[in-house]
Length: 205
Image (tube, rainbow, N blue to C red; front, top):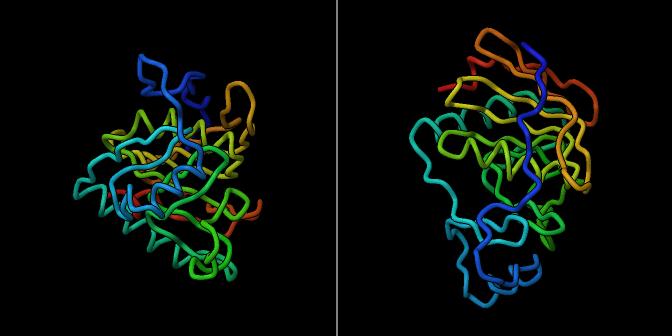
């Protein structure tokens, strides 16, 4: 395991059109879903006010997501549950992280999706999405103060663990990045307490 400086987050917004446009608010995004303009299951996410197409999932990505969920399910204490590719609502975004450890059960979130205050750990499985997960996603999760963010990096075959979110500052980022490689154990930390460890080899396909 090594400790590294977090990969830099850029301060600009990705994929901004060259002509002036009006970004969507979370409320407008929800209204489009309720009206049927957007369908549940459409391959898009709302990121910092922009409708963004999700990356195509390869078999290794799907296998890694399933392995990560299973390992976390086996480890997390009572009072938490594991979600896969379900919405998380922040002030300006509604990403659908590959895996999330949330307080309570998803079926108890009837009136709203979980918010950052309900999250102990988010995981993105990165292959084609590596640049987005290290940049755009990391920035918005840091701004929303998601306490622990993992990137299971299939390109470099490592797990990058980010902690110490800055909150909504000019250049949101995480204070610390730890890189875990095959042979290492990744600590699972919820509410500042270690719930256990997962071997990197148990996560990578």
